[in-house]
Length: 352
Ligand SMILES: [Zn+2]
Image (tube, rainbow, N blue to C red):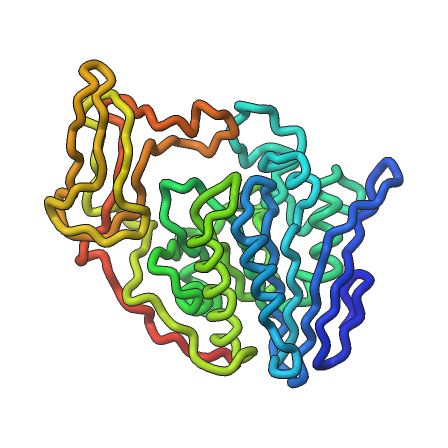
């Protein structure tokens, strides 16, 4: 198995790089690990950090790579922990994003709107092309690791109308999934150039993981990532054992059972984390009224699972004020899905 400058014989784990040539003649090296199983099986491509502030998947993949034993593996794992080293070093979602400039689907350097890349395009499009050409295009299955803000629980996104992708999404084992079967975006739109959708169009199973928390490493999210990738490998028959499903699943494409708005403008301090189970009447946090400096207890209006909690901001932003805990009166501070929204995975079948 050859990927970039890596050659891995069956039963071996090797490290190296995939190289993209830039317009100015420089080379961008993307680190890659290939674990070639001793036995035949599917080719799984997993990468993280297309966006440079989304770090949990990097550490999750480092741990998966460290743990995988190629002599006991069926099939091949191609792991790219830092898909976009230019954005990582720039400490932003993508190159040229200015401080305070919101995340945008339209930005020419948004890597997850650039697939399958362009060898003659901008620096980011060239990275996508190198990864696609050398690695992702060869895979049967693609897992794309992202992170969204801390105030949202981790979730798996995929095409519910593409059975292998939906089965993979459930196998990952996070309780929150988004498997909207809505028609895919029309061709020639930025959304149609998402890695998973490009992979789907080429007949591959593909999912996006959104681990919660950006800017730094969050241990809980990293562990969710490790467990999820290894669950996928079990589902695909690459590792022995069965994937451990979530106790129940909730489709976040559906409306939450309860949305809680701030009764006053103030500083909100949650006392539960996204993903926590809450009982009706349970305290979720305290809102410190900015006018009176008095605390207002915020409680759960129903039983359920907390999907979002905190000073919830709209589009992901790279400015410090967007991470501030002050919420305006009437702004959303929590979202809960009740037991009526829970379902079980419709049969996690092991792929052939
Ligand atoms: Zn992302």
